[in-house]
Image 1: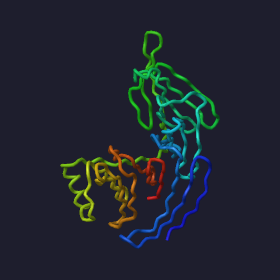
Image 2: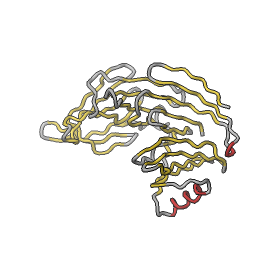
Image 3: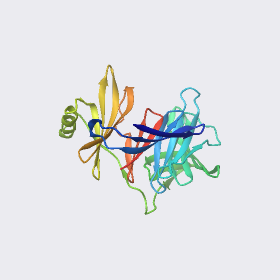
Image 4: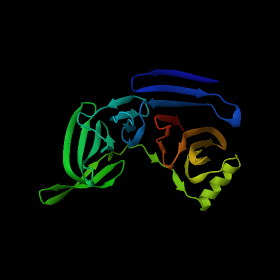
Length: 271
């Protein structure tokens, strides 16, 4: 039996799903799903406020915009920056009400960018820094230098120095012909699955998460297997007929499993 409650706005459809399935000894679960109208390009994490900054790009209209999702309230806000955005712009980080965006100044030279700090709640551009050279980027800081006249000034923008930050757990990538890959592959073969390329593996409390690929003609299908106490909780098909691999495409933020399905759908489950 499947129970769905749906409600939506022009941007998305929200689905709370509860599944009851006696196959494979599945455990009943409740998940949260939010489907965007355009593909998700990338996701940045705010560990302080427990929210996601999401970059979306329309392959048909070339529209480029952002969304902010709180992983506890499930509130989603569409954000359109009041400046010209194109495919040479990208989201670098999120912290509270602020999005940090990089706009390449010269498409032929990926070095210098214009760094923009934007308050998405107040719809105000807080700062615009030109001639910024990016050196290092994480979910908690942006480091680089700014060319001013004939000298460089080093700059660091904090995205999460506060003490009460949610911990991010990311999977470890296992490559073929390694003992770790062989161990995971041996388990999957017992379920008639022959993993290709690489696998991503994460243990969190009493949960095990395995992302793997299966051959589908000349391309690959992408799966995420969720186990708890040796029982299969869920097995998700994340994408069909993909050419490349991206085994890092799930995370655990706090105690929330977060992943993207079919390029447009963000799923969140409690662990």
